Length: 235
Image (tube, rainbow, N blue to C red; front, side, top):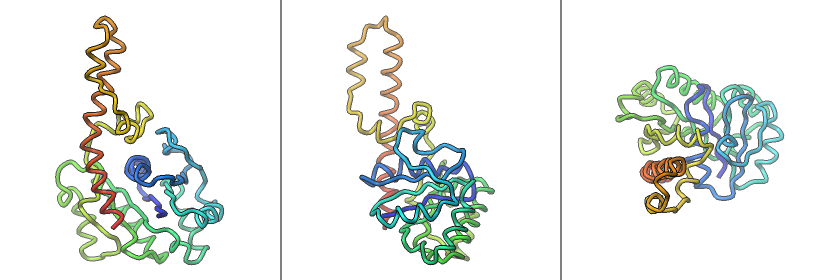
């Protein structure tokens, strides 16, 4: 499976989707960051190959040799990426999903629509353009009414309310520690027991153990919700 994560809009969660939602569920996948300035999966400790949007030829050559890849296209590079993709006729057929994360702001929803329109113009089919509702507070239909309303009249992309990332302080904590969700999920340490074993006078160690335990308690529900979202995304 080769997946491109993109949006004309910045700060909508492309790297969160690539690093936390996709990468842990795509074993042995290669991650490409088409980025100039912003955060990439490398900032969360994942191994990536970094390219600019105008190096599509190099990327395409590598993609043809891979069964699994994640292409995280930064907002500053998406125009070059799409322009170059157009020059390689039907190259979009070698990418299985174009994943568009979106947050609830009106600007992000409008720019997500523009991204979908640009992909449709290149020839990408609606079934391959998938929306990820990011930073959902409570209700997708209400918070993303502009995007969903457009889809009702112009179904040029695919929407599924199971493909959603709900608001959680976990992501900020992970970013601060340069950790991925998988790092926390894979950590089976019993931090409650560790806390009982540490000298009460060792406040620094106790504080770190409490922080690790908090990460675990937040990660469980997010991991289960991500598993549902990934399965729906791949349908």
